Amino acid sequence: MKKSKTNILNMVLAQKEIGAVLPLVILMICVLVVNPAFYGSANIFDVLRTTAFAFFLAVPVTFLMASGGMDLSIGAVVSIGGVIVGQAMRAGLPIWLSILLAMFGGCIVGFVNGISIVKFRLPAFIITLATQYCVNGINSVWTNGKSITGLSDSFKNLGQYRLLGVVPIPILYALIFGIIGWIVLTQTKIGRAVLAVGGNRDAAYLAGINVTATQVAIYVITAAMAALTGVVYAARFGAVQTSIGSGIELTTIAAVIIGGTSMFGGVATMVGSLLGCLLVSTISNALVLMGISVYWQNLIFGLILIAALYIDRYRQKIINS
Image 1 (cartoon, rainbow, N blue to C red):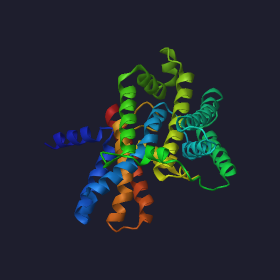
Image 2 (spheres, rainbow, N blue to C red):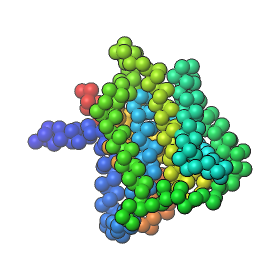
Image 3 (tube, one colour):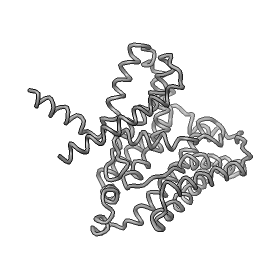
């Protein structure tokens, strides 16, 4: 009987998403006991909208980490995506062209990162940190640190519209991106190539995969999606806040890791990334409703991340045993 219970426990811990599911369930139970108001429809949609914004970035970051990559500049790219779209519309360009320019700006940053890391073998941590400083510097110089306001109502609707008058439109965007990401990751050759590159770069090369092109493309797509996230943020708040992406890269990476994607590459789960983002959003919201100081948020989140890493290490032992 004892051995049977141990086997069941090992089966549960072997699931990639358990690092997000377990603390999320515990948190849900705690908040139900302390303040059931959390489960009100308005609050639930607020949590889901926050989760949606986090998931915009988590989708490409899941691919990036699955390939063995790392990018600390995505927060800065989120900010400059909003700045580019705001400045372009201020100059009189149509919304669609302004959005494309923002994404193109993201692609440039991603290409620089990708070539530097993959082609020239520069450390991902250092080069993307340097890129972060450069992009933030461009943001500050271009805007003098001031927000961009006066955006059109048509543009604001891209982030503020509610389906059926209830569901915030960013939730729909996140759902679409998530489904596309899940299909590509699990059902296509591209997804298998990404996992192969992250699992064993040399073996992937011998299998005929263009490793360099694959990794550079992932950096480009990640940065483009980060810029698009900045666009949606600008539409959501009706103004471009030049520091909107500050710190978002670390939170996103942590959420993806907690969700079950390996920081060493080769293992990824899009569902887990969604759960990780939901956990992050729930922590922020629940602490307020439970009357706990938000200053505890980072401590709690950090402890959960540490626990998730230990669970991931234990899960790898179970799989390899």
